[in-house]
Image (cartoon, rainbow, N blue to C red; front, side, top):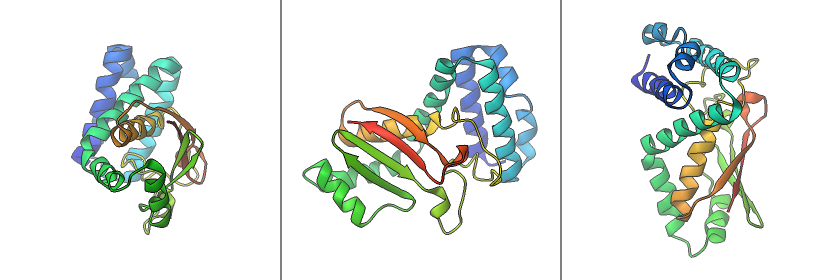
Length: 194
């Protein structure tokens, strides 16, 4: 298994222990030790699917949301260069509206934005890439098309989107998950309250 997969699973475990305790961590991460020698993306994705099912059964909604948001914050830090690129693009324009208009004309691959009043909608379309995938997250890229994962997992993406827009806008934002590709939608949709 790639180091990034191990790091992501370790991070989930760290957050589980911190917010829900060691017992919850052990229950949710059951079988993760076997993944060290696994490189098949489908096997990894199916294990993650099961881990999130165990997380949903083991931990209350508020705590599991916090666990996965924290994973998203760590992912945002690990992918800081990508966020810096969005920030650099944003700085080229006098206003957020000008930036968003420019993004409509030349969107980033697999991503688009819509603004309605004081609400921004961010869309991810991981299936639109030349090599379609179920999720931008490498842990779920191999998820078979007929399988879904609990929206709990997508709180990680919510955390990432939140940190990205907080950096780009220079202020706190609230983000909501509206729909996601791994829960069965065609694309992911996040609501960013500006």
